[in-house]
Amino acid sequence: MLTREQNELLTRTGPGTPMGDLFRRYWIPALLADEVAEPDCDPVRVTLLGEQLIAFRDTQGRLGLIDEFCSHRTASLFFGRNEECGLRCAYHGWKYDVDGNCVDMPSEPEGTKMREKVKQRAYKTVAAGGVIWAYMGPADKEPPLPDLEWMSLRPAQRFISKRRQFSNYLQAMEGGIDSSHVSFAHRYNLDNDPLHSGTEGNRYLKADTRPKFEVAESDGGLLIGARRNADEEHFYWRVTQWMMPWYTIIPPFGTHNPLGGHAWVPIDDETCWAWSWNYHPTEDFDEATLEALASGDGIHVKYKPGTYDPLAEKANDYLIDRGAQRRRESFSGIAGIAAQDFSLQESMGAICDRTKERLGTSDAAIILARRRLLAAMEDLGSDGLPGLDPAHTRVRSTSMVLPKQVPFQEGTAEATRVTPGENFVSV
Image (cartoon, rainbow, N blue to C red; front, side):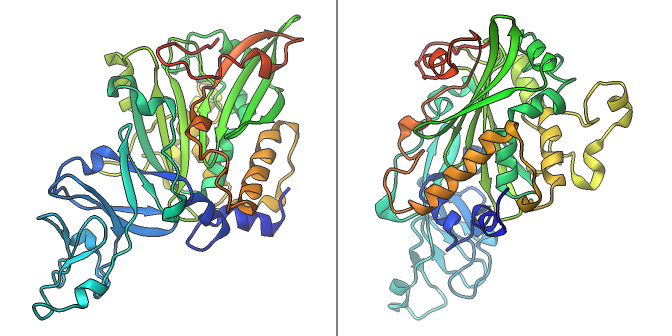
């Protein structure tokens, strides 16, 4: 159980907050590359860590991420004209380049030196792996980009989506490292979901609903082992990677299904971007798999048209079907693995009151993740924060059956390394 003060520290991420300062030390997935695909494309609103920003690609194809509100009279640059290597405010014509420099001030006398004194807040951006990444921290502390395995794969081997979640990032992320809920929340969907079906692991998950957890610190975060009984001599292990500050890799379901992962990025303190990706290190996705992913199966969702908001939402009770619940077609009556998760996480309130929790042995990973985040805030000045080194994110999750006498870290050591060109290990 956290104190109220600790809960505030962990959940508040705006400018000047300790957690906000920590998150700004990392590269942040800001938007999909397709959202600003063409030179002089429409500007896109982007809110990250409580800061309202505008993304655009200029005439030369350079990316910009700048303060949404014009330095002149604070009109929104969303309504601006993206033209001739800059974003021009529609109110009085002040124009900014991708670095935030004011390059034209047509409402002021010709030759004015005022333009040299105006600087729109701007953040560095890089395109990698189909995502636009932003760095919002001190320039002298800029780390290398993360090296998540899917980032270096060909587009045909990966599928990436994002959705808005109406809760604080922390309760969303904690759901991602909570392996025990799979035996309940997703119990009746694992066999028929196209990305989880056809594996022996499903049988172990449903047969043993009381997993035993062993959690160890890794260079980048945590290695989380959930142990279930397989037979008299073996355990079934599902090993999750959690990497600072907000990444998880889901233990795979068979080598024929793709790997999956998430990032939970604060929009503000009460909403977050839930990024989801599936990828396969050795195979292109076939048409049927791509169709399933694009239609919102597995960890992805169906959207409200023209938005990144899920169609299933609080206002419609997440389209709950009590008949399906009674027929055991889904445990909660809510369709889709993603919606089954975020419906419960959002039900906890915009910011969960962790002073009311009663944690058990199955919550060991959540407890340790909170400790690592709190410790990192104390060590903010360090260049050795967990997850900053690209090698910290160059890892895999796995699911394996091991003899009972073999420690899970030892038995899965090879399987949790990324070996380019080789398939992952999974039951």
